[in-house]
Image 1 (cartoon, rainbow, N blue to C red):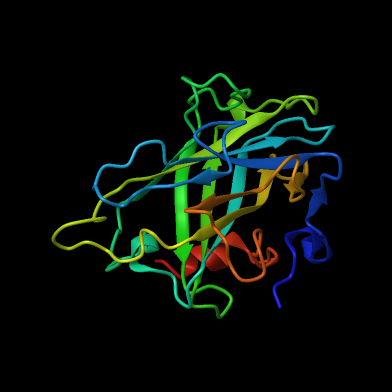
Image 2 (image 1 turned 45 degrees about the horizontal axis):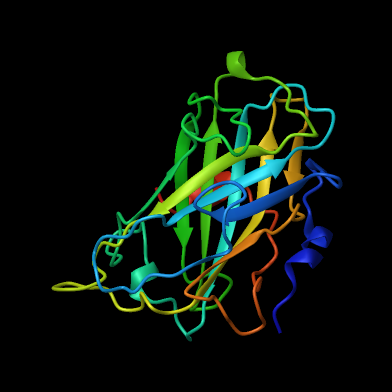
Length: 241
């Protein structure tokens, strides 16, 4: 029923080159980190729940100015639990998810941004693809053209990190579903360059493009995410104005 992530290449947009030899990785804690994160959900303090995306770029880049990131997640239950409802007005844990592209204190992968990228999460769409137990997180980071430079196809670079707090896991106002299993798939990192130069859409995993929460066993296995769609970012952001 669920299409495997590796089949998503058939739906690539024609506006960006496909980075066949490049790849993306997804880990907890840091680049080259772990696949699964567990939490007893008995406290409102949660440490180490940092999702880190990285990429090995294609050859031939000249001036990387930004990145557009697509993450899909799916819970093991019929609906996405309240504990995984972020960002949107009225959601149970509206401010419990934050993103960053500052890796000046990290050393496991190369830091292209050097603290100069600006941006963040642009949308958290749920339900997604008509499935009540799915969500899609969209993230954008960019830097000034004056900072843009090529990236080395033999190097793995940090792309972003997304941190989840333990807020409202227990006590008054707690959000249900912290113990539910969830699978998260980094479906795409699109590297952008100045207009007319050409962009790169990286979708295939270098090592692993998914992580799990509490084991993450979901119907259809993990990864079990829908392919990325050729939707313009303008049309996505217009939904949240």
